Image 1 (cartoon, rainbow, N blue to C red):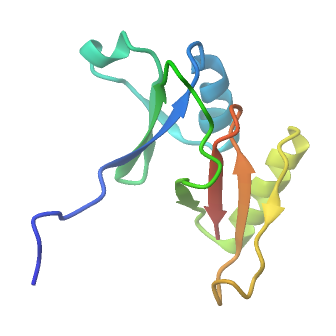
Image 2 (image 1 turned 60 degrees about the horizontal axis):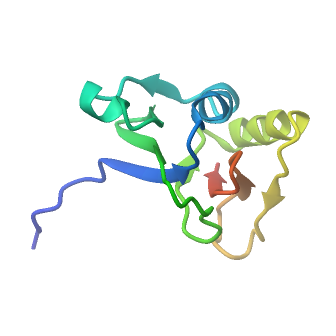
Length: 125
């Protein structure tokens, strides 16, 4: 039986006020996500939106910001090789990459990084 929910539209991570340049550098520059325009009524709140395939990742400003160290978005690279290159680029820019135990999810290559504010991000290949 199919329910009323048909897809995941977006995931939002929180960030502190003034996060836009760092978000562009990390999510747009290092991860290579395409920035998309926020609707004008929401743009005044700060933050940025990015396209991830047909879904979106929103970076939203939170007044009482605290990083999400457990809950996280998981972003899939196009291949294992692409993930390895991405991880190397992140490390070259000072981002710590923590590789997951390969036995946790058989057949999966995964690592974790933190965005500029300490939010956990999972990368899969």
